[in-house]
Structure formats: C-alpha cells, structure tokens
Length: 431
Image (cartoon, rainbow, N blue to C red):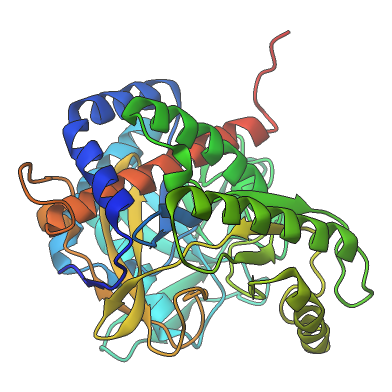
C-alpha cells in the first residue's frame, strides 16, 4: 500500500528514488563497510517525512515502543535481526530481562512489550520483565483486553549483576528511555550487557548531537549518490538556557528561528518550491513528542511563547526544558484515507524489520503527528521493503518507495551509532 502523494512537486524525490535504485549495489556495499567500523544501536525507530521535494528523518528513537503495530508477516524479519543482535553481544545467552516503562493503565504499551517477548522467544531466549519502580516488591500481573497478560517482577541487585528471582540474564534490554533520570540500580553493571547503554537514555542524549552526526552522514551519502544532501537532511540549530516561563534565552531562539527560516527560503527558491517554509522547536533531550511548536514566521514566536508559558502551569511542554533544537520543518504530503500520514521505520541491529504509517485526521501537513489521536497502518516491508523492483516508473512502486524509506532510516541509524560512539563515557581516547 502506497498512500496518495498529493504534491505535484515530486520531481526531486522521484529523481532521488531513481538514483537510489540505480546505485543499490554501491549503497548496500557502503552500508556493509560502515557496519564493519561502527556498531548499530540494538533497536531503533525513525520518523520519516516525505514532502515530495524532500525526504528526511525528523526523529530517531533508540527506545522504540509500538512493536505491536508491526504485522505478523513482519515478525520473521524481526526474529532474524534479534538473533543477529544477540549473537554479537552475548552468543551464549539464555535469558533476556526486559525493563519496560511504568505504564500500568496503557494496554497498547503492554501489547508492544508482549510483541518484543514473542520476537526474542523465537530468537531462542527466555524472556521476563522487571520493574524499575521501587514500589514493586512482588509480582504484578496485568491483564490485557485481548485476553493476554504480562507479569512484572521486582528486580534483585547484587554487587555486579541485576536480575529477578531464579533468573540471571546475560543481557538487559531497556524499553524505557529514562528521561526522568537514571536509577542507581542500573549503574556499574560491569558483568552484564545493558542495551541501549545509559548514555543513550533521554536524560543524557541530545537530538542536536544526533542531527549533527546525521548531517555528516548525509553529506557522505549525497556524495555517493551525486545529489544535494539537503534533499535528505533537515537543517537545524540549537539553543541552551531557554526558559519559557521566565523568558530567558528568547533572543537565541528568535535569532536562530529567523536564520533557519531564511536558509530554508533560499533552498526553496533554488528548487522552485512554492510552499511556506516552517521550523519546528522541540526539546533537545528526551524522546517524547511533548511541547513541539511549529513556527512559520519569527513574528509568531511571541504568541507561541505565550502558549508555552500557559502550559507551564501544568508542567507540560517546553516550559521547563533548558535546551531546545530548532529543526527545519519537513512537510508530509502523504495521505491515508484523506488523513495526513508519515512513515515510521523499525530496525533491529542493522536491519529494517518493518514499519507503519502514523496517521492523524486532524493535523495538517506541517504539524507533528506524534500526538494523542494518532492511529497506525502497517507498511508492507516484509514483502517489499528490502527487495526494490528495478524498471518501475519512479513514484509508482510500493517496494521502491519502502526501500527508499528504509535507506533513509538506516542513514539515521548509522548517525545514531556515530552519536553514541562520540558520547560514550567509556570510550578509549587516543592522543
């Protein structure tokens, strides 16, 4: 299924699709060589936006939930990728401990947790769930609407290891980005593998570092393809010391919004694009989609800042976050049943394993769709995403479209590996 692409400005993307198809052997070799030098994140999801004239990632989540939105047809890919990931990390592994979020009322989230259990059970692991909440001191069973259940167990910490009663795991998988901070119980685990690592968590990680790494990756990939890297790269700026409640850091914000809008206008003029540029202001830390502001004109900032202040009383949004990223807005001109849509690509180890369209009937093409009210339509990656069909007219083939999405998502995953290497506190430093 390919959704309706309503923009007439799809020349550059069709050309990019053709260039990617023509260069497939070189692209796959390039990725292969990169993964010989760099370690991919254990798992990752990437939000991709297709404006017709530009195709770019706008967010990369290193603690993805939503695995329940992948269809059963996609599971074999995820199982194979899970096997590959575990074999590299701990080949003798028998047990996997998953540490989920503390969301007892969210049945959709727990359906995601059960899907992860299915994947790793089929990959040959015993899977159990531990709670990071200090209030959980006995087993808690959550019953889900479909008749399934999830049992969460209290964690047991020894000097060097973390586990459950009668359960000693080789690997511990976080499905919680720990944006509120890192619990001490997870620190100094020198005899177990904690994935993703603590420096990938939301209280430490910064989107600006990720997109700086992605900018480097996109330039190298653009050179490989012979295309302008802007076609696949959202420009961005970064501000520290921003406090919407007290009004501090507003000069930095308005200056960077104005400068970035000017850069985008220049690019639109270069490509003859007759759309209104916009930028997105969002928290630089964490992986939640809270507090995202769409800014179409620097003069609109005052009103938007007023709205952010109003939300501050409820502890929501950008008001209490000291660092923000100002990112070039990428339109999404894809529709599913008339609702605005964007593809979300799921990966494990270095492999694309599936994805879905996030859709929202009440949002516009220049707004974030990662908000309450979104729904999900699976992508057919299992059938076609890894097998492009050469000779098809650009823009007409779902396998080619999905393959292109997978290439862009893998670029973002590669950028994440660069980012994690650069921020690893235990990395060896050579003079």
